[in-house]
Image (cartoon, rainbow, N blue to C red; front, top):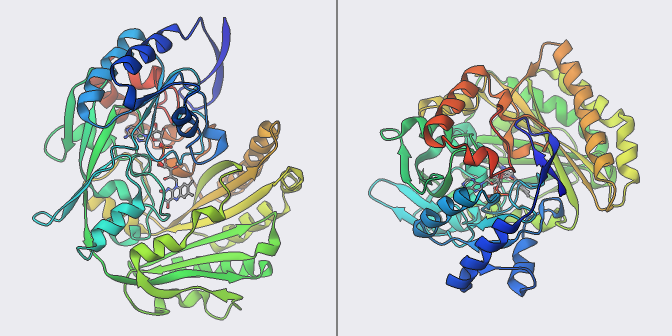
Length: 491
Ligand SMILES: Cc1cc2nc3c(=O)[nH]c(=O)nc-3n(C[C@H](O)[C@H](O)[C@H](O)COP(=O)(O)OP(=O)(O)OC[C@H]3O[C@@H](n4cnc5c(N)ncnc54)[C@H](O)[C@@H]3O)c2cc1C
């Protein structure tokens, strides 16, 4: 008997037992025999590369085999077999989620979608069909040939699938809503092998559920997305001395409080707390080729150390946010909270975060890093989502900030300490926000940690809706029980 750690419905780790992984091994052997080019097993070179291709080491595992799916036919055959043999499996597109086991698995089958990467633009209806395993940079490059773009990742290499199923925050969200709001069709394979096209007029319940519902209903092979005209944009990063952090946070509140919100303007502040010599990074993106537009006037007058903003193509802008800056050798935890716009609260959040004793604990870890990010969300983001049919996220239609704490470390045995330190800091700021009436329950899946109950915070109505969709499309609860990783619908 082996003790296994599984994710419970609320995302917490719970101990459970399993007798053996024999079904996974025999299923893998059978698939290896019939499709050797697309199945990797331990001790093969390709297996070693693929098992480690999750973005952060915290998410890498040792599956019994990795099956590289290329088309619906493979999944139609594979999924019923996994169900029949009760084999645990994980689904991976771009592998960027830093949640352990979200998109990799020990001993079970890893379904790797990286070869499902077709990108086909349709000039007739101005939509693009994209495979779940494609990367945002490739999609932007293809669409740029048509002077168009899609609402998606702010970094080049993120996978299409995970970002869209978790909501998806884009530099274009103030204008067009979240990335998920711009999906017009999901091609989904259900646990019984049925292929469904979920859209506004067919399987519309599944269509809405997938807009934030993660991996709880089926495997999405292809997404069809709206596209928008876009040529050159203005934007990039500005670097400030660390002591300007309070001024930048105050400016952010003023920027968000402006009576007229410019939908072309988008902002993010990233502040390393542990490594203060790095300074503070302000990213400004304006989706028109206009330098220093008035929308960003709140940030004027704060002394800048380095300014990389320029007019450029959108694909160039995305490529300039180099992921290699964020070392993929480190273990990462992302952790999220949502608060109402409030200048006093923002200032308090900054001070509580900076002064938390746990920051020193994280600093002492090897490569210990703690970063405080503020992502302003305008009412436009929520309104545009509703105009496009709505999602399952339960967002309030008011200005808010999605806070993200990033913790990194490299010690083999410091995981518990790193997670608990970050958790304590977030608990502290959430208590303060609660007391001042500025707490929002929403938790952004794409920035969430493994122990955060993301879907449970979408609101009672949304949770009830998601459960009803699950009963209808996955009555055997395969994606709840056999896909143990990722954020689950609370039971
Ligand atoms: C450097 C970096 C930058 C980021 N920037 C942004 C950003 O700008 N905006 C934003 O919104 N998020 C951002 N994120 C978060 C990112 O969007 C999420 O981690 C997202 O899950 C990544 O998608 P993926 O396909 O790479 O993930 P994966 O790790 O492959 O998958 C994530 C989850 O989705 C499930 N899943 C994936 N594909 C499918 C599918 N086809 N069918 C069913 N389930 C599936 C997996 O099982 C897993 O639970 C960033 C993350 C990193 C590391």
